[in-house]
Length: 400
Image (cartoon, rainbow, N blue to C red):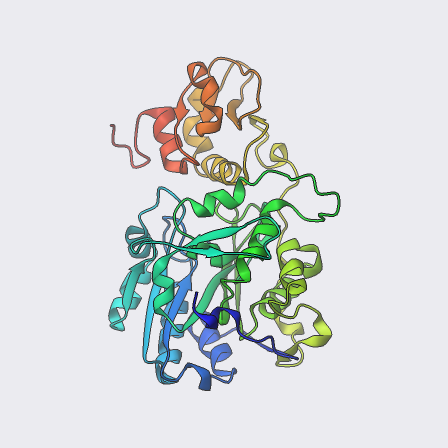
């Protein structure tokens, strides 16, 4: 990989924050508060959070105005070129996702390239010091750029606590490599104080550290993020040349101790950036006006979906995420598929022994139960394909 992926950690990095100026104004303000002399003459990739098909300003994908502000400020600072690219979750057409959320139009208006990062052959990057990963399959197109700007939505996350500029870098992993991080087995290491997914993200960041971190909190997401939570209008943005410092500061503004977020803590321990509050300079120095408490994810699925019976054992977090998104979007539209107890029954994971007839079977690992009810194939299947498997219709009402 380009050696710019491992920039030196600043002794006391600056994190700029802005609130109350709207999506464009906040992003322009925080970027302009940084020393941007390092972008002059550089080819820059903006990697936004556009992993799913959704409308603009839903709290799932980045706001189009936030992307526009990044392009405008970087161009004014003398960047040689700016492109916008993403590798979404499996089953999502990234170009269609860019169009649906309004980012494609904002990028076209500025004459920049819009990229499917999976279009180029992948690069295999070794991780000799990786805790759980020996290597990574990275989107090859990333190598064409001098600097990477990670533009993330401010969200809570059901598996990793939060998803901000660091975790957003998973969208530069090639196709199924993203899912593989969710499927790592517990290695039984008695000294491991974090889940394999968090340890894998920290490994990833040693080669995919973003050069600039920007966090889009115009409309974030709280609760069952990254895709099934509630929109959280926050009218806030942060930016830094140190992504760990940016994420740690964002956590504090969200009412979350960043040291309880394993991938942030581990990234700091690996030297990716600074997380301690006393080692970060903030601009402005008093961020009390930027406090935006976010609701945390529920600890049990039954608390979020009391009308659903979930059979789960041995499921990876990718399948759990898509199941939650499916239930959040469609449970009211499939009430006719409830069983005699008045509940929907769904199964996922490879270790569930038995389920009643009529259970919705989600993902390849649960295929042993496919004779029991509607089967959504995939690793993982997206929410719309689960709905299609259950009803025989597309979410827009058309039949197959």
